Image (cartoon, rainbow, N blue to C red; front, side, top):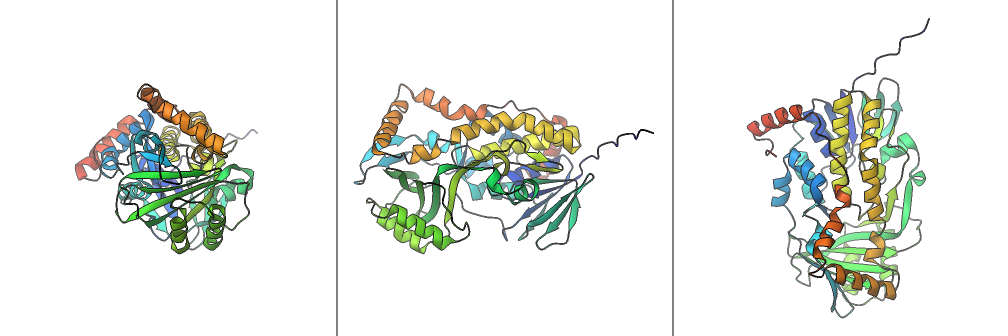
Amino acid sequence: MRETPREPQRIRTVLISGASIAGPSLAFWLSRYGYTVTVVEKAPALRGGGFAVDFRGDAHRTVLQRMGIWDEIHRQQTHMGVQTFVDTNGTEQVTLPADFMSGEVEIFRGDLSRILYERTRHNVEYVFGDSIAALDDTEDEVRVTFERSAPRSFDVVVGADGLHSNVRRLAFGDESQFLRHLGYYVAGFDVPNHLGLDRTAQWLNAPGRAVSLSHYGGDPAKAGVSMVFESEELTYDRRDTAQHKQILTERYAGLGWEVPTVLEGLDTTQDLYFDAIAQVHMERYSKGRVVLLGDAGYGATMGGMGTGLAVVCAYVLAGEIATHGDHRAAFAGYEAEIREFAKGCQKTAKGAGGFLAPPSEQKIRSRNRTYRMLTSRFLSGFFSKMTTKTAENIRLKDYPAAVVRSVVASTVASGTVTAA
């Protein structure tokens, strides 16, 4: 006797790994669609600081407006101005307009993370200081073992835990299968603002190396350092900060301008970011009841508008879950909607390292000439369109609009969120 296929179990509970941007963005929408959402984050508390992130184009703006946070992002934006490339004497070589590097609006990652957390913390369970240790993906649920908490089961698990995703490793395998090194490394930390910069940045280039000092607002006594250098793939411990400092010191030894002062600051900093400029490439973003969002599934270290990509794709994933109910149809719809969009952003990001740190003097001069031309009065309109084209390469569905409107209306009435 032939068995009747079981009706797919509808999603009710969702575990999201990662409380930076992608995870809380997804939690925002899912909680408003009525799902029970838990976010687990290995850090002991919400992470502050980080690089500035930007938004540009209709897709980014539409999602943020529908979330009711567009105005708040503008209130907390960096107001960053131009960024100038200089020679070793500090003489200007080329200046890039604010909208090229900073988009339509720019905000520190930590500030955006806090906005999202404040708008979800009353409806979403956040578990800080913990991490997923094991996943048992069954036909009916995902049984999750945590590093600290007691085991629990969820209908689906979402990996929104970044380029070096723990969920991706547990569900799909080691990151070496998916991570593609793009030939550059990037570092960031703070130093005293001895140049007195005010919402501007200066970059120095040498072949295959770049270093910048910038001030994005906030504490006028602090400046941010960014370092980008060309390199074959290095073998190092991602958690060994002393090793990262040694690599950077060796790579930047002998450079003039403000580099000796920057290296003094590197020696004493307690908050160094260091990673390869890399991308994640996967044939599928889901497996069973596990799905990847943002950098975990299709991210790039920099240059691919990764934050805007994550926010838009969180909207799509939540909408597909709400539309279809069961994980198979929802995940298939999600992948179909966002794959080309994600691939386009990754394509744009491939040139980030070479743009910031061209490998030769000739290419540095060529880069400078190109951007002098593109930022001229005659081509400024074309330049602006070029920087937003990729970010707009998706047609957003109007997911359960009636549900969204009714929930947003009720939260507006209670003062939890600003109306879009």
